[in-house]
Image 1 (tube, rainbow, N blue to C red):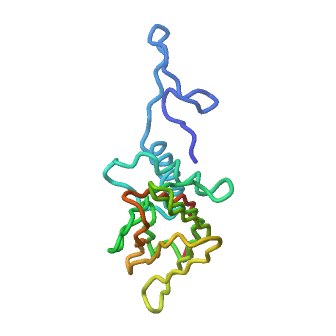
Image 2: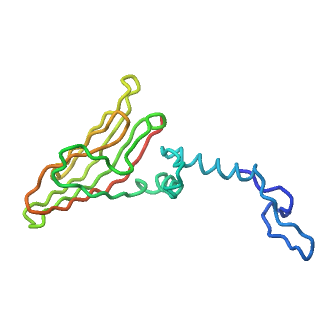
Image 3: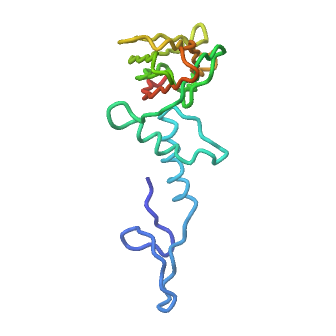
Length: 186
């Protein structure tokens, strides 16, 4: 990173607001400092496997990148599991760019329950995905423990992880999947 060294910077290369009464100018913010800051942040976001959000909708990409690199397992996400989901449904935060990501390990915890309490399904496991560069597609596999939550995972050629689910008894059911994502770069 580059420290500020433009007009108005302190001797220790810090910014200052200046003092007009004493004819001390405020620090001039230069393009080299701003580009250094931008590119340092961009490097962290891209290294985490994300694609830069050019729309400014996702204002937590740096935080997500940092959290994915620290701690045991990274950021924990949560998504509702729809009961009786016959067509594959996209899972939030699970679109993997094969240009930057070679493989993924996703620790999952699934819980599904009917409103009558007659059905309760729990599952814990690790969902793996790997990009086969020769075939040009993704493959996935689930290593599951405990009861089967009756959720099936697939991954599209574009790297989007999806799921389908069975119908559990009861007039209403709730389902939640909590997960953390670890990636290996290309």
